[in-house]
Amino acid sequence: MTAEYAIALAATKQRVVEAARGIGRDPADVTLIAVSKTFGAEDIRPVLAAGQRHFGENRVQEALGKWPELREGYSDLTLHLIGPLQSNKAKEAVALFNVIHTVDRAKIARVLSAEMDKQGKRLQLFIQVNTGGEEQKAGVAPGELDALLALCRGELGLEISGLMCIPPVDEAAAIHFAFLAKLAKERSLAGLSMGMSSDFTAAVELGATHVRVGSAIFGARG
Image (cartoon, rainbow, N blue to C red; front, side, top):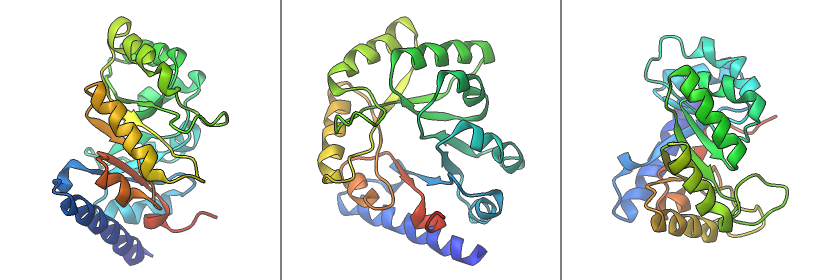
């Protein structure tokens, strides 16, 4: 399996490179996040061995069960929280993760700010935008983005690196990627966390700085 993971990782990286170069972007400006949610340490170790250093997890509790041990010996590893964050998990999230992509409401922003102060840490943060207006999906409504951004930047003194979205499954992802890029540009935000296994090349072509790819690297989830 080690060879299979290495081949899949290399193929995914090549697709990022080709998508970036195709529109004149530097591939180095795109961070590939290997989404390891639901996969155990035995699946992650071969991907680490193949040189991957950015990984994404959806749940704090699941990540706590495998990453403290996994990251030993990898001081250059970056762990991304890409799933919804509950306020009662903020302490553990700040302690474990390097980047949080899912800041989507004032309460979470305040709790994260307090925890980072307590722990003496400064994480990279993205605001998740619900570009499709889906009631069941996390993310701030586009019309409420400015208020949340002002709170983060002003009162809380948080550095927001960019925006993140998860397009509706039944709509063309590119429309949402372009919309997110527009929102970010208008607010002088450089980071764009968008694109998954099925659409990450389109995301790169539309300006993604971070793509979150799971099944293309690890295979189908059980």
